[in-house]
Length: 79
Image (cartoon, rainbow, N blue to C red):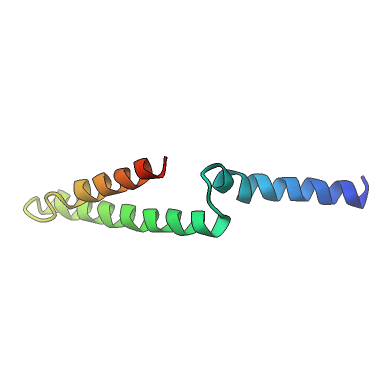
């Protein structure tokens, strides 16, 4: 395999792993990373709230559901 062919294969692999999906939702790689990390943070907060609520039902009664509704709205606003 020639160096040019290997470079083409690598660039195609890089594009498919890191660039194609962000481009499909009209974002850069870093913009998509920022959105996904923010989303992951709030999912973690919702999970912790649900865990607290599981052990102490009087706490965090609506926290997880409010966060999930807000995240759902963010996803829907992007499309």
